[in-house]
Image (cartoon, rainbow, N blue to C red):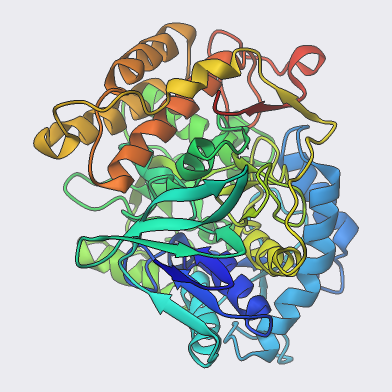
Length: 515
């Protein structure tokens, strides 16, 4: 066993910004699950939103965020992000982040769905990778920060109702423990819970499962965002086709070449993500043919220059981004729910903090506004670092949070260990991911959700020595149960049997806790 001052689990934007903020206050240990740069941050193409334009303001950014959140955004969290975000994004510029520049030398601003003005700073179509580069360079130069790669955290260490460190499986396969006065979960999302996803293999919901087992509250897990445009070509990987393309004029078309989105929403191709994702599926069902994204009406040189990474990925599967129809379809992309925190990253368990996609501040409500994710990680990573230097205390339950009836049913999310491990059943994880996609995906119903819950309950007795597999199965069960419980449609959560939003009964963040 070893000791340090601060432990950070995760090497994405939230974890790295926290490490920088903590570096002057003691020894910091960053644990990454895979290679240091393998995180959802590196896969973020579109950009980072901030109200720095002459026609923009934090209040306008807040209004767009809340409109996209479909009536469920936490106003305090929104205010903190849109106001503090301007300062932290300018900090990135000062640190050398190579954002694209306009003719006047200022950062070029893109527009994405549900934004009323251009406010998205971008570095080509690999913004997350560029921000990660800058943050990793700063972290590696800090003498007080140590990084251990290929460390799979298996458990949080809890003593006297306080998290005092973590246990992890190192690269050599042995169990290790590290004690710390404060522990930050910055583990990212859970897209790999679903068969079709834009997320990398590391996104298995580890932080949510770890926090839940340690007794922390989790909230809003039914709200999973499905990105409308992932490449949908047989035999090719489901890589993300950024929303920024539609912000620059790309159009969704059916097999006849008809632009169809205004049939489903007045904002057309720039409607909120949940609307676009469901509309693509409905249009495909209506016509019996796939849907494509076309940029053929735009200047081809500009397209290839503005989106070099996506153009190269398309070339790899025999497509010309600037000329060919690009077959697209929805894929799991982002989870709005997560570990329930306040606006300083504090969870309901003293000594445990969470920031970035793993956390649920209520910022995104029922549906995240495009390019708010990198901003969220940046702001709350910095704020968590501030809180972690103070005496440990648990975050109280906010007034707009409600403990869900039957939360104790969640207590068996892991179940008793089985005599047969998942690693001995290669298809088990694939079956869970397929089940989640079919029954807990874009279109949900009581019958499908009940089937998913029943099958996941039965699978809860299957354990695995691999923490990621155990965590994926547990988080899948939590998401399915939360989706079954919410009997309305709101944002990214769509119930075919309850197709309307119901503010009277369901305008609340629903919270669960182990036991």
